[in-house]
Image (cartoon, rainbow, N blue to C red; front, top):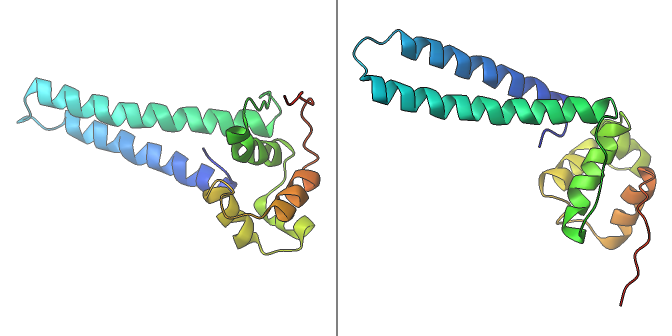
Length: 137
């Protein structure tokens, strides 16, 4: 999942590089057709995956994605998606929390694994996350 503008730009650049590799493969006269096809398919699969991530990031930024949480395991992704959908950068979230941007980057990169409950609640509130209440039995 693309989490910030830097990753977005890097991913777009990687797609361009992979496309260039595919183009150069087509110029290799000594490659057997089956090997060429397998290599092209492999690179194309990577490109397709990255394009899906780019599309998700762009859709989040313009509010086209409904953010849902099915289980508690979805919480890290929900927090990241909510931040992006608010148009908030990691730096802006860090400022709201009174911490350094690198800490937010670490939280998001690790899926919020290293965060304490108190800080998690601060992130939740800073992002104004709301989900329907569920009955616990």
